Amino acid sequence: PIKRAWWREASVYQIYPASFKDSNGDGLGDIPGIISELEYIKKLGVDIVWLSPVLQSPQVDMGYDVSDYKKIYPPYGTMADHDALIKGLHDRGMKYVMDLVVNHTSDQHPWFKASRSSKTSSYRDWYIWRPARRHAQTGERMPPNNWESFFSRSAWTWDETTQEYYLHLWASGQPDLNWENPQVVEAVHDVIRFWLNRGVDGFRMDVINYISKEPGLPNAKVRKPGFVQKAAEHFSCGPRLHEYLQDIGKILKEYDAFSVGEMPDAEPEDILKAVGQERGELAMAFQFEIDSIDVGPSGRFEQGTFSPTVLKKIVNKWQTFMLSNSGWNALFMENHDMGRTVSRYASDTPALRTLSAKMLANHLAFQSGTVFLYQGQELAMANLPREWGMDKYKDIECLNHWETVLENYPGDLLKQQMYRERYRLVGRDNTRTPMQWNSQYPHAGFMPTNSDNTVPWMPIHPDYPAWNVANAVADPGSSFHHWRKALKLRKHHMDIFVYGVFEMLNIDVEENVIAYIRAVTEPSQALIVASFSAEEIWWKIPQRARHFLLDLSTDTTICNSNAIVSELGNYASRNDIRLV
Ligand code: ISL
Image (cartoon, rainbow, N blue to C red; front, side, top):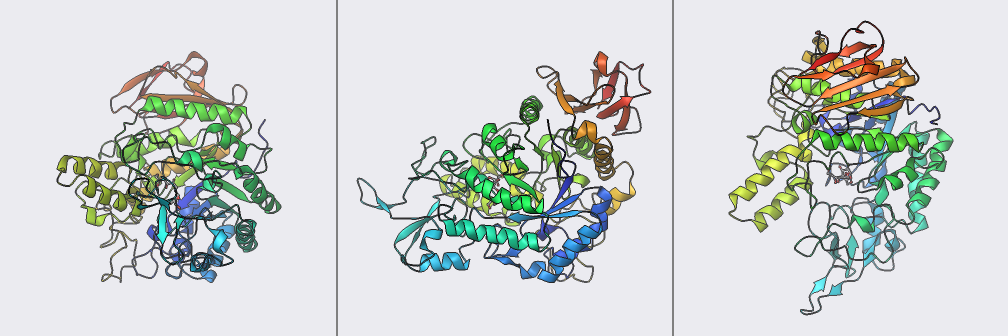
C-alpha cells in the first residue's frame, strides 16, 4: 500500500526560464519575470514550480552545462532575485524545485579547467579521461570506444594539452563527472545541501541514471552503419547507481525534500529500485517510453508513428507496475526536450486544437502519479510553424543533427525534407518558443512593451494573437480553465485520483479510445474517457460505470469530446456517451 506523502498529492509546473517572461527587455526570460507571474501560476492550481537550470553557464545546452553550482546566471537575475522567487512561491503555499545537473558540468567549470590542465592535477580524476586507441590498419588515432554522443558524433573529445580523450555523453562542452571518485560525490552533496539550506524544496535530477558507468567502458553493440553507436546499455543504471541515489536520498530525507529523477533508457525494474517507497532513493522518476512511440529505434529523428493503442499499453504497464510494487509515477507528456503534445499526438488545427489539449489533459491528469505540466501546455501551444527555416532553430541537438544530415546526404533534398519534418514534430525547439502572454504588439507580452529594439532570443510563434494567456484566462472554455478544473478535481478527490487503484478498460480493442477507471471502493470511483479520433465516436459505458456522474466535460454538452465521469449521480440512464 502507498503511504501518504505531500509530493504524491502535488502537481508540478515546469518553467523554462529563457522563455517564460522577460522583465528587463534583453530578449531573455528571467527570474523577476517569473516572480511577476506567480499569481497566474497559482491560479492554474499547481503546488510545485520546477525551473530548468538557472545557474551560471556558458549556455552551450541552455544551462544544462553548469560552470558554477552556487551562482545564478546573471542574465536570469541575482541570488537576491532567486531568494525572492522562493519566498514568493512559499508565501503562496507553493514549493520550489531546482534542476540539478550533475552527470556532467560545463567545460568552463573550474573543476574541469583544473582537470584538463595537467595529468597530475588533483582534479584530473574528477572527469573521465582515457588514452587514444590506434586503428588496427591505419594506425590513426581513435577514441577509447565507439560511444555516440546524444548530440551526434563521438562522445569523446581529444585534448591537446594532456594528449588524452575525455568523455561527454552530450556536447563536448559538457564533460561527464567521474562519480567513482568520492570527492565528486562529496562535491555534489555539498551543492545539494547548499540549495536546500537556501530554501529550495527539492530537485529534478538531470539524467541521473547515467552517473554510474560500466567499468572498463566497453564498446557498444554495433547496430547501425558507421563507427559511433548508441551506448546507453553501458551507462544507464550502472552498477553503483542505487548506492549513489541512496546517499543522496539520506540528505533529501533530512529536509523532507522533493525529488524526481530523469531516467531515460531505463527498465521498469531499475526505475522501481530508484522510486520504491522503502528504497530511500528518489520520490519518482521520468521514464521516456511514451516519448519513444513515434521515434525510430536508431535515433529520435528517425521515422516513427504515434499510435494511441501503443500509448494505452504503455500507460497501463506503468500504472499497474508502480501501483502493485509501491512505486510512484511521474506523469508527463511535454517538457523542454520534445514536441508540443497537441501537434504531436492529437491535432493543432484551429477546430480541434482546444479539444485536443483538453482530451490530453483528461488522459494524463487522472492517472496514478504526480502530474507535471510544462509551460504553455495549459494554453495548447503548438509546434513551430512549418514555414520556419532552419535559421530559426536554436537547439544544439537539432543543429548538430542537421549538420550530419547535410554532410551525409548532400543534395538529397527528399532526405533533408524528411528530417526537417521530424525536427518540426519531435525537435526540442518546438517547446522553447517564448510564452504567449497577450496579443499586444510586438512580442506577445513576453517582453516589456518599451523594448522594441531587441528581439526575443527565440522568435515568438506567429499564432500568438489567438493563443495566449490573456485570451485563455478570459475564456471559460479554454484549455487553461480545463487544466485548472482538472487539477482541482484531482485534489478534491485525492482518495480516488492520488491513492486509488487504476484499471484500464478495453486494452485490446478501440484503438482510438483510452478509457480507465480510478477507484477506492464503490461508489467512490471515476471513469475517464479520452478519444484520440478526429471523428465522432459513440462509446459504450460499461455497465458498472453507468451510475457515475459527469463532473468535468470538455464542453457544455454532456460529453462533447472527452469526459471524466465521477461519483454517483445524474446520468444513470445513459448507456453511451458521444466522444468527439
Ligand atoms: O533531448 C532528448 C530527446 O528528448 C533526450 O535524449 C534528452 O537528451 C534526455 O532526456 C536528457 O535530457 C536532459 O539532459 C540533457 C539536456 O540537453 C536536456 O535538456 C535535459 O532535459 C543534457 O543535460
